[in-house]
Length: 140
Image (cartoon, rainbow, N blue to C red):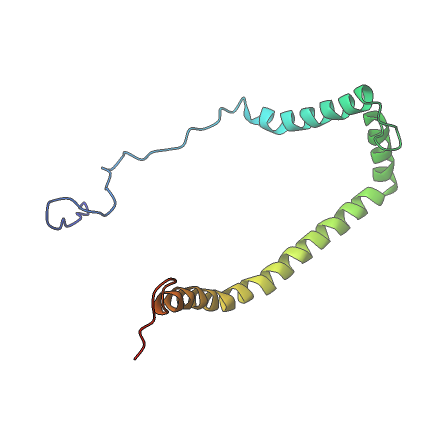
């Protein structure tokens, strides 16, 4: 059975148009060959900008170390166990902040939404109920 929208007056309706079965529109898919490029290309752009800033603009090694120095320092920090600990601590803080934002923000938003709706409505009513600018008030 197909659902039928009852047309009012002139045979047209303002409701959604129904599609026949099997006519599902799909978004175009990205080919599987391109998916790895979508991950790798942004990193290559960042590394190219890094090398360009280092060589073309003469940025000092203290402000922007070379890529080799960063990879070497990262491998040392992983070997010593410092980097995994710091990454875990950062992820914990991110998760805690997100959970706190949800626990506080969602109930607060639900409490304030009716108040905001009421104030926006009352603002419209109070603005329309008063005398309009430039109008003369009637005196008795």
